[in-house]
Structure formats: C-alpha cells, structure tokens
Amino acid sequence: MRDAARRPALIVNTGSKQGITTPPGDFMIERLDAGDSYILCPDNEVSRALDERRIAWAAGDIIENRPPLSRWRPDFAEAFKASVRDR
Image 1 (cartoon, rainbow, N blue to C red):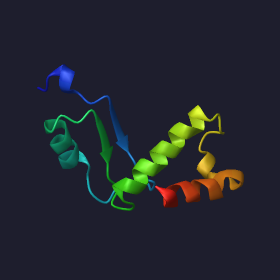
Image 2: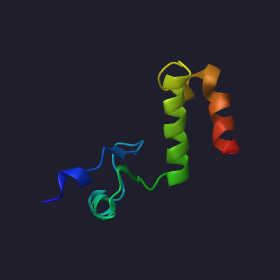
Image 3: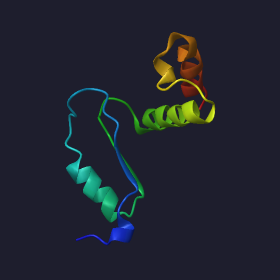
Image 4: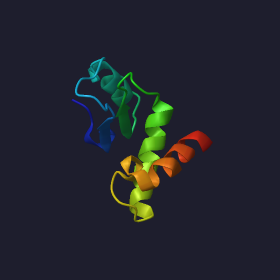
C-alpha cells in the first residue's frame, strides 16, 4: 500500500471522447511511483502540451471570471486559439 503522503492531489483523465485508447492504469502507477502530485492521464488524441494549455485556460476562466468552459463559446473561441498558439 502506498504511503498516504505520496498520494496524488488530483488525477485528471483528459480524454475528450467516451473511450480512451490506452488504459491509464500503467501510466498512473508509473507516475505514482515517480511521486507525482498531479497525474494527467493521456488520451492519445492530443499532446500533453495541449492538455496543459487547456487546463491553464480553464483556470483562467475562474481567475478572470469568464464563463465556465469559455473556450467553447463563440465570444472566447478566438482568444483561446490564440493562447494555445502563443504558448
């Protein structure tokens, strides 16, 4: 059993589709063993870099008081695309 102090604070399955092409179990165990505090399970659809940019944008929704999931709204879509390109 893993030490409670080494448990991740958050495990995020970033898959945007119903199914994930690779089961996250092996990846998750590998990252737990590495001592990661946050685990982003890959979906093999987009890069980790893009997942990170999407997460950063979602955090910005809170900080900047934008509507939730603003990247999907027409009035924020271009700004989101620009933020992904510019990073």
